[in-house]
Image 1 (tube, rainbow, N blue to C red):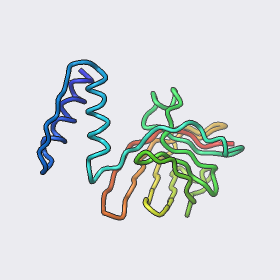
Image 2 (cartoon, one colour):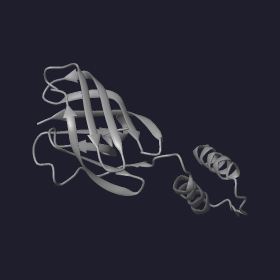
Image 3 (cartoon, helix red, strand yellow):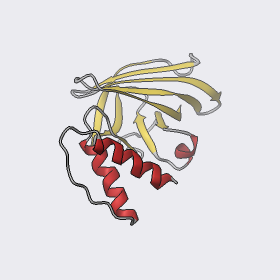
Length: 162
């Protein structure tokens, strides 16, 4: 079922392009994955958010988020920061190291906010504390904007702590 949805989505994206192309699709899994990957890369007006491993640069306190609780438990993070100066993501196939512009005080607030800017992206993280012990668990959203006006918002689930 998952592959049918992926195939159909890729087909719609490709079918809506102004330039008509001939695409051959076979029923094996590799061909369907190839269509999905090429559709993500070729589609203008979108931002590809990829998972990252926990950055080696982070030594102490940090915040790190996945798209949902299941991905978080499998360590499929889409965002990490050192709870102070530097944030890490992989967008549109590039691993980015970005400067945090502002960040809320996680221990004092029930709400988490972070603002990050790089040359190509403006990122806003907003979350609400759902559990607070040694590490604070948050659920919320991450919004990514490009200079061309493209905006993508994704749910996040993760923790901040030392």
